[in-house]
Image 1 (cartoon, one colour):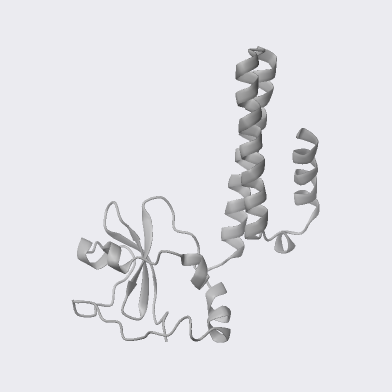
Image 2 (tube, rainbow, N blue to C red):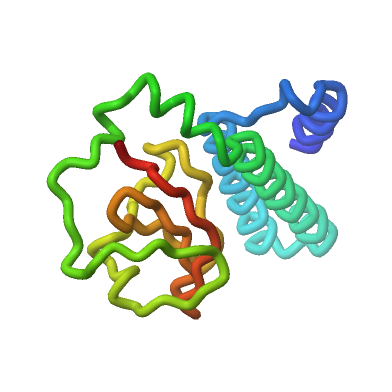
Length: 168
């Protein structure tokens, strides 16, 4: 397993940054590798060999770090403007439809606090990848507000990011 990790790291260094975009398939493969390393660690715990346990812990730690880096690279390469080109080819997906909230439209900006009624579960975008939006961070959600899309910190109610006229 170490050979595979070292080979992956060497390949990541050798490839140019622009060409190293991670696909969802590769991230899934890294998740599978992490699960395999975790299973091997559990086997080492059962055997009771301290040296083997230490080695397996290091392998699990390395696999977790690699998965984190791959997710970060994928999200970084899926930049903020990636959805614009995709939207032009998939207009039906971004169609506004007959959608209205029970409150008036307000033009929000980043950094302000909004009421929980604006970012209730009714307005969550459950699959941001479908619209080519980046994955929200911890305690954050993409929320639809008329034609706009807001990234909201649901713990504090703060608007983190606003994309205006997201829907047609």
